[in-house]
Image 1 (cartoon, helix red, strand yellow):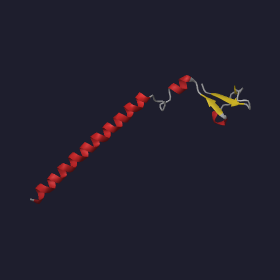
Image 2 (spheres, helix red, strand yellow):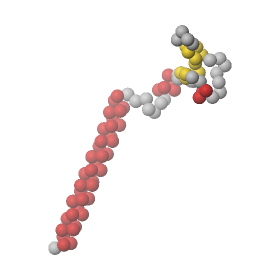
Image 3 (cartoon, rainbow, N blue to C red):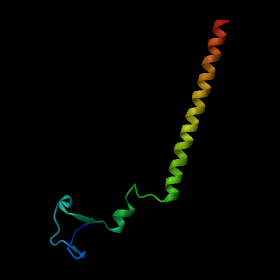
Image 4 (spheres, rainbow, N blue to C red):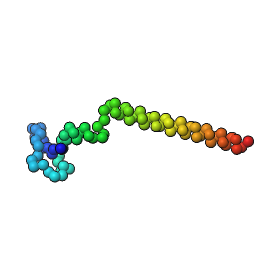
Amino acid sequence: MALCVQVDGAGVVSVVSPQPADLSTCSHVIQSSAEYLNNPLALTAEDGQTIGTAIMLCWAVAYVVRVIISAMSSADEESASS
């Protein structure tokens, strides 16, 4: 559960009591560990590397398919002209 907190002039963090119904009105919001870990954008370096590798592989496959289609279409044009 996220908590609305406030920071006083001395830098001390204290929980706002009672908690507001709308957390967008808080100046600072602290998430629980469960909320942080369930965030789909909180990736480890290994997760990011895996996703990046998958994207690069998709680009490589698309490039190869494009080259094959281009070669096939140029071969069709040559056979049609002769």
